[in-house]
Every structure is written in structure tokens, then in C-alpha cells.
Length: 151
Image (cartoon, rainbow, N blue to C red; front, side):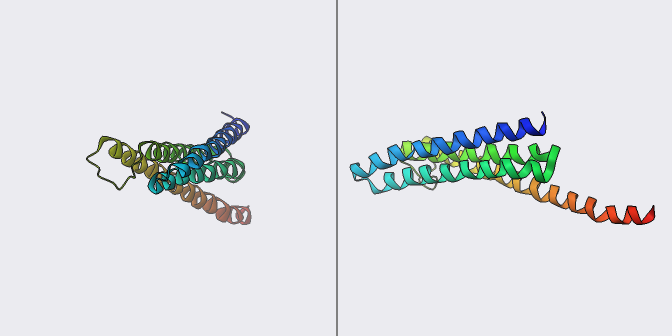
């Protein structure tokens, strides 16, 4: 996959996630009329966090190929999977009207909890990959002047 294809794919995935987050404003608004404060809060979290996740993916899709060129996919993929994992977890949480920290003996709560954990682990992988690539690039750039001085 070329750098341009990676960037285009992740821009599209970010836009789709942002649009999904915007659409989650509909059940959030409808939940206000039902008077269930917990459910309204769960839909608010799903709505806003999905919009932020989509906007973040858009920014990352522009920045990462410029920073990491061919290696950008190693950072973008786990960030994207993480964002979509949080989208699924937050949306299911609101749909089921259960929070990840409710009784985990409940199958629905357990599913939300597992998705939250999976998304969190993917986010850790993405951050570790980002720092690892930054450190690697720093070492390359630090050693370049030394090589030129040797020539």
C-alpha cells in the first residue's frame, strides 16, 4: 500500500467515524426526553467521544505519513482500530444502558467492558509504536551528521 493510499484510507475511516459520532447525537437528544439521566449520559459519551475519535483520526491521517512515511501504517492501524473499538463499546454501552463498571456478571456489561479493554490495549500499542518510531527517527537523524563528518 502506498503512502497516499494509507493516508486516503485513514482519512476516509476518520470521516466515517466523525459522521457516525455526529449521528449518535440523535439518540442522545432523544434520550433527554425520556428522563433517564444515566442513559442520556451514556449517549452523550458515545456521541462526543466518537466525534473526537473521528476528528483525531483525520488529524493523525494527515500527520503520520508526513512523520513516518512508509511506517505510518504501524501507527495508524492500531489508532484506527482503537477508535472504532471505543465507538463500538460506547455505543453498545448506551444501547444496553449499562456502563463498563456496572455488574460485570451481566453479559452485556461484560461485552462493553471487554471492548473497552481491547480498545485501550490497541491505544497503548499505537502510542508505543508512535514513541518507538519517533525514537528510531531521532537516532537516524542524530547519526546522519556524524556520517557526513566521516566522509
